[in-house]
Amino acid sequence: MKNLLIILLALALSSCNSKEVNKIKVYGWLGGPGDSTDKEIRDEFQDLKDKGIFGLMYNGGQDPETYRRVGKIAKAVGLEFHSWIPTMVQKENPKLKPEWYAINGKGESAFDKPAYVEYYKFLCPNREEVYSFLSEMYGAVAEIPEVEGIHLDYIRFPDVILARGLWDKYGLVMDVEYPEYDYCYCDKCVGDFKEKTGIDIKAAEDPSHVQEWKQFRYELITNLVNRLSKDVHAKGKQINAAVFPGPNSVAKKIVRQEWDKWDLDAVFPMNYNDFYLEGTKWIGEVTKEGVTALDNKIPLYSGLFICPNPEKKTQENDPENHGLLPEELGAAIRESIDNGAAGICLFTPRRMTEAHWKVFEKAVKGEQ
Ligand SMILES: [Zn+2]
Image (cartoon, rainbow, N blue to C red):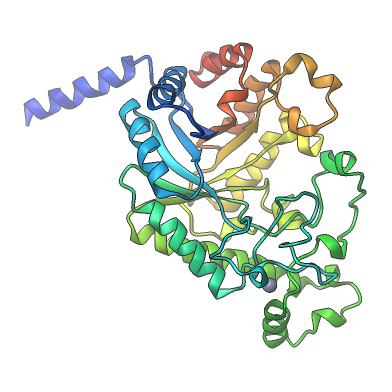
């Protein structure tokens, strides 16, 4: 017993002394592997580990073998490894029938007439076939021993309202819900809603005023998440998701995510302040909102959007090239942690400049 105490004490001391231990748990969203060699992947992962990254949300397509290969390298380096794979957005695939894609309020399919951008091919979350496809796809990845968890993304409807910072980019004023961006009006969704509530949504003068219709669609996404969660947990793996900020202030309103009701192991709200024309203080506000909504049931990691070219930010029109400047990063991290986040997640480590990393090191080690 005495020996055990000494060992425990020694372990406790050594972990305190370790330079690698951050005060703040940091994840990063990363894509790959493209045609990178194992050595190139290992060098990058080792560099990220040395800089203080704890784990990766890794986007490498849908082939389980990719995650086996890359996951093995992540494990060797000591990084936690999650497979980041979009959910409702699915490109053409022989396994998916065109009629399973979502239909907007004008009767147009996201399959051949997607909203905003070509890749916005959203599936209908109310189709049993869609659930089966997703369950099988995520299940096969979750079986890979190197994969610690499944990271859902695009687990939502298309943006019925775009974030304020994107209006200029798309030349739109989105102060109300418009039918061309409002989904899903497929026969199954309209029929199931009628059966459940007695309301014929197609006859409604303004569907955006029908609260039950909003709630019905929140629940379609919630039910899908919770079924996938059961499947992934049955394989002994974690499941978490990238979500919009909120849930109430943004996520529910613009993409119909009631994510505080989801059976997940963690959430990663994309607290991308520049998309909402907000500063770092807002990151603290939405973090607090999320943590409060979750009521401490699961950890929340605050997603931070990094500006890749800080010196050019003011001349950039495209919000995709905006993001946190090095001089804002410390405040963004502090706002997140002070308001209850369990850590942060960087979008992306590859967008970080030397100046970002300098601030980052001080902030995550609690020296600032
Ligand atoms: Zn539908």
